[in-house]
Amino acid sequence: MNHDPFANVLAQLDEVRPLVKADEGVWAQLQEPRRVIRVAIPVKMDNGRTRVFIGWRSQFNDARGPFKGGIRFHPAVNESEVKALSAWMTWKTAAVNLPLGGGKGGVIVDPKILSARELEALSRGYVRVLFRELGPTLDVPAPDVYTNSQIMAWMLDEYEVLAGQHAPGMITGKPLSLGGSLARAEATAQGGAYVLSEATKKIGLSGLATVAIQGLGNAGGTMARLLEEDGYRVVAVSDSSGAIYDPRGLKVSEVLAHKAAGKPLVDYPAQRIDNIFSIEADILIPAALENAITPDNVGLIKAKLILELANGPITPEADRELVKQGILVIPDILANAGGVAVSYFEQAQNADNYYWSESEVKEKLRQLLVASFDEAWIKKERLGVSLRLAVLALAVGRVAEAMQARGR
Image (cartoon, rainbow, N blue to C red):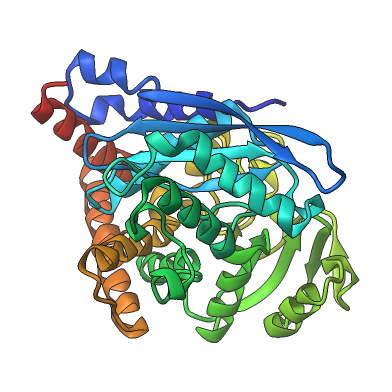
């Protein structure tokens, strides 16, 4: 079944609409991004030939502040996905009450097959074609799938060369040497861990709960490590090569070292499994790409709680089924907001040219996400709706209020 990501966004808006007071003009504007820019990026490859890469930047809404959102390099990037991610970023920044809007970028490419020189040329080319649309007060990119601090450094340098001035706040997720923030690399997972801790208290799960994590990239891998340190038992993990399981609990540090050595996850000495969603675990954490949980596999899930560390991993139809089953879902726009929260902290530090310690960053993040979770839980209880609808109602309501105040 083909699940269109932006159609999922519109379905979520339809569902939350009765809970948000906003005029027809606001709802009409929220049906599409303010602009979607399609770009063609020429790169001279190592063999001397020029290859043109197609990419996008979707700027969904900036009523609450500059557009904010990552750039992903992935073979499956498409316009609908980028539009959806820009909408979810708009709700995410509003859900945790940051003075930012939402945007997203992507390029159709498999960066694993590019040389370092080709990857740098592509990164700089992306900034060149979008230079006039980016900036600390316009649109602030960040890392996403298959992009990292080195790519952000190249993009920052290209922007500053074109602008003729230093502008570290035009991009986040940078190396520390260029104005990056401490704790940024693990911020998405760390924020998810803070939110998960609050949620488990609400439904009576102990810190000894079992966990299955789908996706073992930066966010999923870091989450596995953090949860093991907190006393959870990580019993199953998966990546693009497959899934492994140990009911006694995997040794996360060994699994991550195995992957870091370039070995396929499924070659790690543990039981191979066909579908991580069917595992007996208290907590399921989808940490890969969109549309992982669909009507086709939602019936396999046995977890009591799902934390969406990925963006849009559950389709609307599957989400409704999970609500019927009484499974608590912590939605992506709250569960993985740690990354954009620390990106905002990075912008604030860049603007002041004053930098915080790692413990200060983590404590500010913890306070922000615990307060946001508590606010969403209160709204959930008051309205008698799912946590996803409660968080969406808070977020969309804040965006609508800003749009109406501006007269849009």
